[in-house]
Length: 256
Image (cartoon, rainbow, N blue to C red; front, side):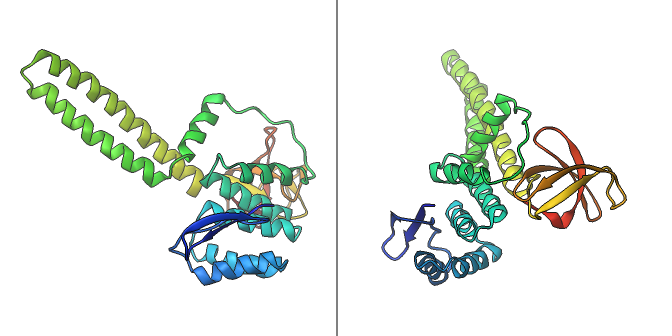
């Protein structure tokens, strides 16, 4: 598991043999303390330091990746998967994150035949995650302002060529603005309002109804990735990658 460390004091990034790195806005000493503990092999202490930062509201792909590494080192596969998945949402094309996620998934007991996702949905999600939600929103706003300026050129210009140029370029910027606005909304949903989750109990039965008296439909184990379809009280209706659905207690999983 590769550790990436942002040396804030000298503003340089360099790699050693384990975690990743936040920005100058975080508590430098606490993060550095976690790095020191990790390199010394005290993974529990490193995990405590980084989780405190995460629970305080700090978010970065590097921090989530490091927490995943620390969980993996303490043999907590569900925790490692949870934070590798969270890291991938923030940096989907990162090779280290994707590699560690792939390796960790091989340690999950359950294997299901997955229903393939439509290629254009996968592409849309991937593109949406390449820039933050706020980043896409800013691009959309700038594009819309350019659309209005070019539309003004079309309306008020007395020259035919300028009117044609203004119309078509305005149309292109309008389409681009709407597209980036859609990317912004999708990114926000995937990162902050997503419905994917990781099972955190050694084993849990999927029930036919949201109560203990429901019929057992299937058994799943720690580390399995599921999709939350509905919530009733303290029960979640989940969907497995093969399409099967069932109800499990809310305390048996963590939302990615």
